[in-house]
Image (cartoon, rainbow, N blue to C red):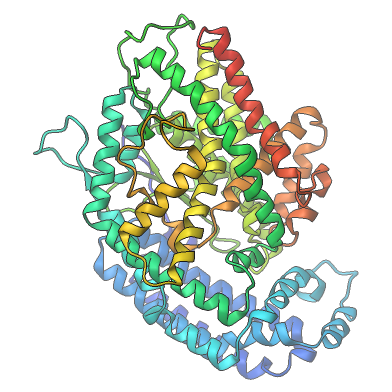
Length: 631
């Protein structure tokens, strides 16, 4: 594969390197600004709220600019100890500055008497759309801050927690875990001992793209053993600290349930989240098992598979060109690798078919070098899109290795980028959507690219291959993520009884797997769960954002329902979706989905969405497989 593009941060941020003296000058100015902010506005929000919010936003933009630049720089250079030290020093300065000069603001805003807030809102010049003249523009931000009032602690306590966070909170442990994970390397199967090892992203890509069951099984074995040598202990230590901190915070701040803190951040009632989890357990798990029964039959026919194990879960389906059944004697093939240029064309074409505007945003991200593409050593694993601040972001981090799944990841992260660009008009304090809607554009981006590829497929065999790959992705987003949530539930529940250890977490992982995928030999399509006990140890969300993972299931089911709405009633749909994305964090999920006739607060919504979305795809794959002789 030719040299892959790297992002170029300097033109957008204005800093030449993370060690640029301009950063220090910029931070000194920001610190002076923050000190003046406290002197001018503390105890005066009853009359000066609009100006205070505007100044707080301006300071937040400056702080986010520096922290984002350093985080992005570090995430592609994790072995650079000097950069790590630099990032840590700036983080410590920011924590002290926030505690001393800024932490009071949202606490006072949350406690501001309703009458005093209402009086200022009533004075708003509603005839003007100019942000700087309109307090009502910030209504969503104000409401979000004030929802936290019952859970805020005394000012002195909040300040102390903020100032200490770089030193004694979970952040240092989580940072250490992320770095150690990035340093892991593995031997590929059939690789000579003298050959260079590969990082985890490459190993996973090779496993999921191989048409050889033995090769896949060896990849998974190498992964599980590699995690077990060291990372499980680091991950257990970090996860134990995160779960312990989460428990203490929940009790001290008065959250009523394990997920309530995350749900409040998402402006999503506990009951709705529980309804989602229950729906996936009751309707999603049977669909998942039904699909894997189909996949098992096809792999036995096309690859001569003798035993269906966890390493075969994401295996590619390669239908012979004759499109019919197979004896399993065909030569085993690796999934055809896709070049970066081809991947860009695929995503651009799919986006353009739905929305030329989104396609234009995507191509701008490519042309403006906003995507760091290659899977290289010393780089953070996985993929993400950082919105940064309006006027500078977004930037995507990928670990592209040329697989079909990498194309889906590009479509996914580019959806996030489009969402950010559309929402920037809400201002820095309001452009971030709640997690329940944060994955909407990204998963919709995957869906439109998938449907475009399905439309141009040249044969029924190719269509079945694409359908099976898509069902793999949906199950990973819905059922697997909810099994992750169950693992977190078990781990956090046990933390109240003492420190978590790796062997205990292994057991919780296996319990969650059996609850969602069944017990081999009893109620599972899998014949065995070989080499899977340590796989919990490489999931970063458990550490950085506890109980985040259900948002993937939430978004995938919402997007599946939205896409079916688009198929049946396409008129005006693009405009409605772009309007939803443009709202950023100013609408909750109920209000945002109302124009589409969706009612996610209805208890039956999730089971119905599963049957329509995942069930529809599984039925489509089963029908096509039957036509091709794989029933």
